[in-house]
Amino acid sequence: MSNILIYFTRCYSCIPCPEGYYISNKTNKCEQCPPNTYLQNAHPYGEESCIPCGEGLKTYKNSVCYADCHLVYDYKHYDLTSLNGFHSVLSGASFSAKGTRFNSLFNISLCGNNGVGTALCKNNVTIHSEKTEDFDDDVKSLICRSTIIPSPTGENEATLSAQPVSIGDQLIGLNDAMGLAGITKSVFPESPYDIPDLKFYFHSSESTKACKNGRSTELILRCDKNADGRGVLHLPEKCPGGTCDGCTFHFLWMTAAACPECMEDDYYAIKGECSAGKQVKQYVWNSTRVCRDGVPLPEPITSVCSMIPWYGQLAIAGFVFSLLVLIVIVVVVWKQNKTLEYKYQKLVASASGELPAAETCAIGEDEEEDNIIFEDGKSTSFFSKLKSLGSSNSSDKVEDDIKMPLYPLNFSGTKPIENINI
Image (tube, rainbow, N blue to C red):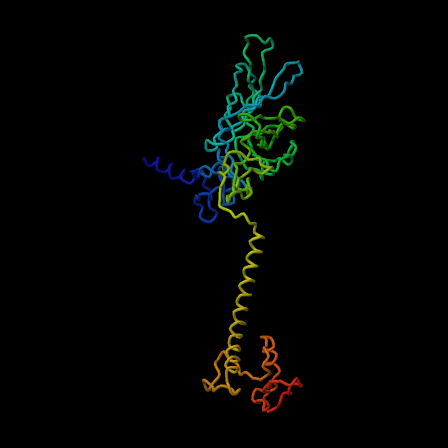
């Protein structure tokens, strides 16, 4: 019993940290990696061993990054559910030194399943060399490759699948992880569309004599709205076997799933003409739209409108305002004229020609002290009255001489008597 305890105590310090935990340099205790990061190696030290998964990717138990089938990147939503599972692409025919024909079969699993690869490459060769460098058993990974040897006679002989190997058992980044995968340049031309490609980078740490740092894979998803079903996987024209150096692999996947979902910025409104007091607003897609599904086009909206354009309404409003101002001016001038006319009529109605008695000792707040000048008995217009009022030099002086017209009768045909000043 004591031996067991001693053994257990001695081995206690050798127990590794749980999955997704690193060893703290300060406390030597296991600490969990921050959210959306994964552990770099099996026995890490320090938080710097936790590597971010990057935009658009998720982490599972801080141990592996994976792409969800509903991906969000650069504020755009992508629905990759049609690409779930694994897909295959066969390279062109190659020939060995003895003339044996063979092809490379690639199986790819892209999204979902919490980062666990579902691509399976089988090995149905029963007789093989034990010194072979590649895997001899079935391989299950995110991306794997196997060599297919068709039947030489083309009859009932089975096709051989041999040398399965993983070329991507870990997803390390999306779009900005080219350096992490050891890939410095893509072999495919850039997309002619405004929508950027989705570039997934995978890595396999299994090393060989030719690939001491393991193998890396670049998988490019490019938007193609006209692609049927899951789309088409392409291999590089310069490297029909999928690789130019044996260690770095390239794939181009033309699919409609790589087109982002439509958003409100992908359409605009058009207002129709105002007819019978109604106007219809319709929505149309942008001419450069490359999205799919997502937000649908809104239904047309009918609203009440005016037959007069905005500039006509502005002119009418200006005219009405000017008319109101003119009416106010006329009313003010009319009230002043009534006051002057009232005083003038009282003066004319006086039989003696004298000023009427004052009705009040003071001048009203809205009245002004007026100077009165007596003229001859001829009719005087309103403007003449205003002119006579403005010609007075002093408001305190009253004319001493008052002109009184006399019209004597003339029965003898002589000249009329001139005006007599009184």
